[in-house]
Image (cartoon, rainbow, N blue to C red; front, side):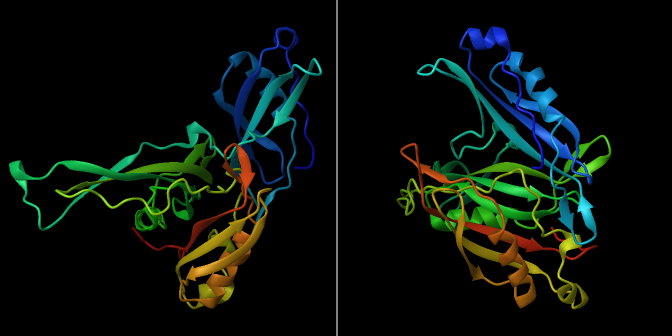
Length: 306
């Protein structure tokens, strides 16, 4: 961000010690100026006009693609809080927790499986829930999911991997503004069920703190960012990365756990995630060091991957 104006704390609400949380969706143009802003979450609508008036005056460093500046969309949270100890009103940017905005959530899907050993029809065993994951995805304007991360674990490492594989590189309907499709972030909940006569296996990664990617950034993994050598050789694939994140949200280390098959694509994915911003994970309401898995999908222009 280059410049920002703090939203005014409405006088009558400040005097009444009224607190609020407001989140704004912002479209930034190629010149770094705000093209559009809208409220997508607000605990008190009386704060909305103040936030929008301020945000429209913000200026940002434009996101850069291989072909130059590019437009992007992100969200920004604002907390209006009254400090009882000092008897002053303070404005805080950021949520202070690693929770993601509810408005990013898409309609969830349910995956139901059954064992070949169990009978079908009226004699089929009962359906039991195995776990639910939340998958944070970055969907670019061309309709491809370029980056995925499990931000809420099923409690089972194999199911979490299935959550990633079920979404990475897929085609979806992108976000839009008045000018057409734009890059955007979303969260897809996936619930896993199984018809089984035995009890499910116990979780192997219960209550694992996860540091989520900050969904207000543009990542350099779009078509315009494709490594030239890989593009010429028509190389494509998915890069699985394990990321260690500090309690301040800084990337400590990134390692490849599964290669795309191209060293050039692997290196570009490493560099993109090393430069990405994360929110710290929390445990007992305190930021902690953590690790997470991220998949970067390199998809050739004009491909019909499904």
